[in-house]
Length: 179
Image 1 (cartoon, rainbow, N blue to C red):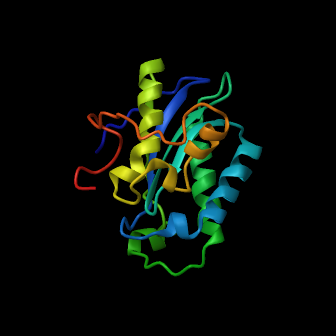
Image 2 (cartoon, rainbow, N blue to C red; image 1 turned 60 degrees about the vertical axis):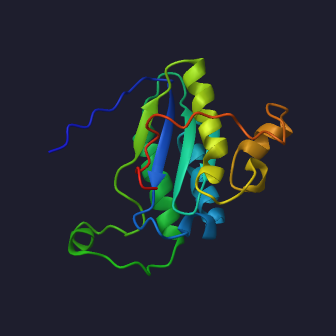
């Protein structure tokens, strides 16, 4: 039995990796509007700030800061996942366990989170979000990937449009090694 331990720090800042069940699917970008809607509705119910986000075809990374006194990121992810799933037609194949639990076959059950420790850790994970589409060979320049908070940060003057990053991709970011 896994011994998963989550850090619950009220008002904390976390980096997340969330995957679709079938990693070869492109559900997230095909249905980006439904994903955005699920995120917005969740923020209306349970507020949180999105410091960075990048949505790729089969997974996403996000950095969130929760309100003071609140450490419940799991409920927020549950609402986002279920809201997104309800927006999609029921076309996925389901195994007996998912059928018995009345679950959709869209998302992996769990997600990976990392409590941001300090400013350097924060900056490293923001850069990881920016560079991730290049890492996966989806684009040649960061600015060419449309589903990223990179563009919001360019408009705000936080980062230059031609930023390419000098990111060290060492360490765990919640992705499989063969990805």
